[in-house]
Amino acid sequence: MKPLLYLASGAALAVVAIALFATLLAPAASEGSYPARYLEALEAHAGVPVEDAHFDPFVQFVTHMSTPDWRDYFDRVYADTLHFSDTLTVLNSNTVLGEYYGRLHAAGAQTSVRVISRQISGNDGYLLWEMQSDFKPLGTPRRSHTIGVTHLRFDAAGRVILHQDFWDAAQGFYQHLPLMGTAIRSVRDSLQPEA
Image (cartoon, rainbow, N blue to C red; front, top):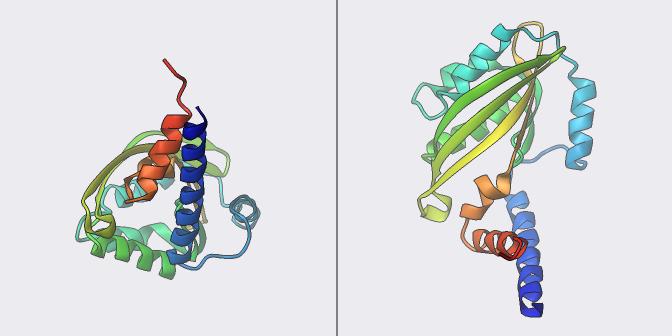
């Protein structure tokens, strides 16, 4: 059992090291921890009461992210100043977010999103979704299938001012990366109960 524990410990350290390296490659974000930035964004971007129609432009955008006209949908959705976090990066401006989506599109990432349900609670809107992505980390084709929730808030014009995704980035993205994927799968497998 000790070799398995050493393997899991080594794999966990490798995951942490690679995650830190990946963080250095992500677009610049505001300082502070992930929870602190999200809590600050909740205070800074109170939004307006959500109506079901607020979701429609956003849903149209996420279902057209991989199409040539993605930018037309994007430009109708996000406010100039916002809080955006997809668990991979945190951004605060429409311009930088557009560049981020542009890089994903230029890299050939193909994404299919299906919205499963919509929930409204005052100024907060939530979408439960299923996503399938085809991407090429380091040139190797990969397919990811995941599920998640997006927390949205809107301004008076109906544009998104807060976009916070909640999904399992290890399962949906990182496990598909060379080296990191092996480490994540090793840790996951070592934590499974013995049959």
